[in-house]
Image 1 (cartoon, one colour):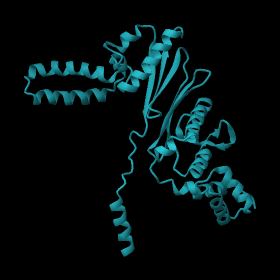
Image 2 (tube, one colour):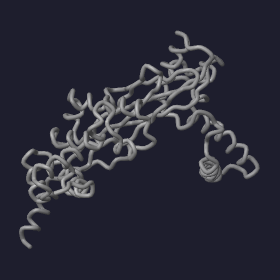
Image 3 (tube, one colour):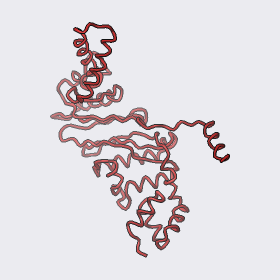
Image 4 (cartoon, helix red, strand yellow):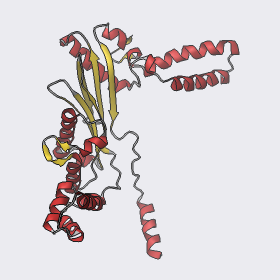
Length: 301
């Protein structure tokens, strides 16, 4: 029986196993779908499908800078910090970061479909399926950023063993020791201060309008006269810029100067990214009593 791509795809969707494993199973079983499913289950390769619905909010953020200066920061998630701290999981994260540097995918979806840079007989998604089956937890590539500087350099910083990852691209006429020190100070500052934008021109109009509305109402609630409310709001907007814009923030190592003053015109910040592990993911809250009550309710039906 001919093993078609659609047959392989169907088996993969039903089991969650890798594409190459699905093809091998179908060949071994003469194209019989049910036998191929059993074959994968026996090999432990269908286990990934059972884990697809679990919440993976642990894991790590990793960073990598290739020899050509291309930088990558990536978040890979798993279910427990125990797995996140294993050498195998850490190596997997680094491999995925290297893949992004080499293959330059535009999105996670594109990355998953790409042949893995170190073994093109498998896709990245195949690698994740195999890791999920062997490690025993749901593994997911959540997000990444890739910077390829045309002039200047990329620097990265990982804080607390993968809890926070930062990458910054700076432009400068020459990369020297002074610039490298500045870039390192920058990534550490970004990790600590969590800016949202590089400079005030990047703040979206809707953000400013919303901030002005809130600040105006605050001033009114404080009983300030209408004639000075506008002036107060503009003053507080300036404070808002210093909170959210990187170059206007007080430098964490010397709060008496701003980041702009620290850079002193010797380099310019092009862009940055800051990932915090698990941010925005709803973590599962274990409630043993509720779980037991739910199971008892099922038994009564």
